[in-house]
Image (cartoon, rainbow, N blue to C red; front, side, top):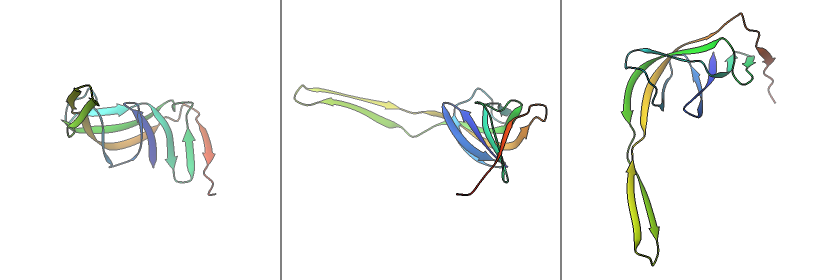
Amino acid sequence: MKAIIKTGGKQYTVSEKDVITIEKVPAEEGKKYDFTEVLAIIDGDKLTTGAPFIQGAKVTSKVLAHGKERKILVFKYKPKKGYHKQQGHRQQFTKVQIEKITISTKAEPKTAEVEAK
């Protein structure tokens, strides 16, 4: 079973036991974190989509670590003007492990059969 989730302005395709790096989330290390913005769930040949999210769907994960990415340098320069400016940036991230993908049976999501083209 796979799911497409949205977090931090990005979309990720995940399955159970995957370890992914996402933008920082407000959860402590070792705690559970639920993603409720689930765009689609793929279960074999069955595709369940939302409009835009599937109601009652949830992806449960465990927060493994927080950290900072490698430093990137932002360099601005204007020729013949003597202007140059250098600045660094380190993006914060959270590493999570996907534990369970669930969908509520109460909600009636749109389903479709996946066809090979």
